[in-house]
Image 1 (tube, rainbow, N blue to C red):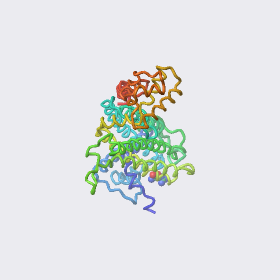
Image 2 (cartoon, rainbow, N blue to C red; image 1 turned 30 degrees about the vertical axis):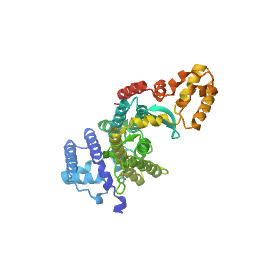
Image 3 (cartoon, helix red, strand yellow; image 1 turned 90 degrees about the vertical axis):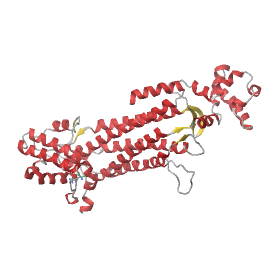
Image 4 (tube, helix red, strand yellow; image 1 turned 180 degrees about the vertical axis):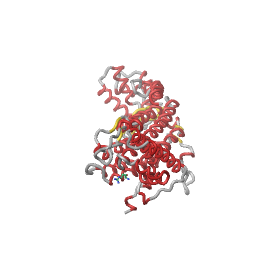
Length: 442
Ligand code: ARG
């Protein structure tokens, strides 16, 4: 029973939040005249000592005391005697754990937000340096149109920006205090829930005591936001794995983020990226574990809910590590400009530019221009040439109104420079967007 029931092995991690909640509760009990000044002062001082002992590693956590709440209270009693027993007036472990866990998730959000900002800074720096670095843009992993490496980096800045705003939404909704809901029904003591909410930095007390002890929406939202972020990191990780392969050769990672093989001396494996890609599964798993644990749970508290902690801690740790590794890799990676440019020029990447030129200069409808370019691509493809290798005569056999000015739009440089629509890939746009992103996010 002790082994399956005890949570101290993992909820000891909540000690700081638990003690902060207890101090706020104690101060409120004193102010309301429920606990005397003398006992209250002893409790507050005792809680500070417990905290100091835990932080100094001089606290022996006991499984027989089940959880963090009882471990702290038992030590408090050892330190200050029977007054310790007054702390648990007008409260229960049910509102206590709900408070502790909310505070922990709130702190975790603040830490992760900071790390996401660091990742954005690394991406924006790469974007600035590579605003004019041409690379192939892909759809279906087939070369589509030339884009810039900076533009590609800024796409991830936007994704991480949404991840941060999802966390901010979650934080705003979770920031209500369950403390004072007691076991489930509220309490007959004349407590002041506004005061404890304020002291702990919550916006207000939760309105319904049953909801206060049974709600874990905030953990679900937190893990949903983390899952989406992990998926974003996994997509970037996958690109890094592709880009560092010999077949792509788009970027190079230094020895700091690659490993060698024990048998093949030439290998530079992108292990960090692969692990980030793999770890997304763990974070998603945590979300699914909590959704499944909560579904079908009747109000209010059920011990099933103790199972919310380990997956949540693990998901937060996992994402934190993934963010750190990804930020390091983004700062480390060096794009191979020649390889990127060469890859952008294959696969008829400027075919759309040619069609656009025909629309603009000859005045044909886009669909018809599309058809003409299709014929030209087929012609070039037949003997392995690029569009710019076709002679003017060959082009005119397909569409007589084409002039030699067409060659201007067939280079990848012209192609990206022309994409000046808002949010487009033109180097000037990228520089402007990088500046705007710096202002908005950093
Ligand atoms: N360890 C419990 C949890 O994590 C704390 C609340 C226990 N409440 C109770 N009535 N046993 O959910």
